[in-house]
Image (cartoon, rainbow, N blue to C red):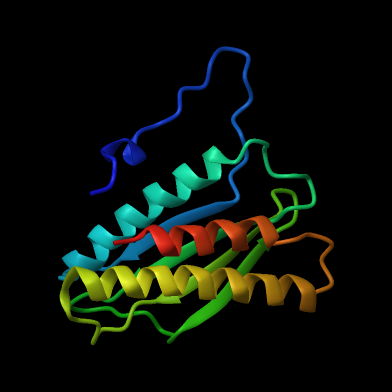
Length: 157
């Protein structure tokens, strides 16, 4: 069983700058979505990513990219208009790349299947981000994000 404290928040003291994160996990859930196992897996994944990122002894270096992995879940009416993983916006000032993951409508099999899907997708999304950054000739690295993603993938039950 995982420690429930992974869902907690770190308190920023007065005068302290918030620490830049390496990976964000978010989701777009369409109306009528019935994928509760995937939603639960994403909540767990986001908590683990946050914990692993914050447990690194030093903040991300200035040459490290931030990766925002956004999972798109289908609903009763609307569905993602893409399949698989695709890269999105690059925000130069924040050194942030958005990577989108379409959750297949046919994903079923309970929490084990959902956990395996989101873990594999996180690692694949960070890999896609690294390839995109290299292809675009951007002078940033996704190595820290890759290490965090791989570590988190091994922690998901």
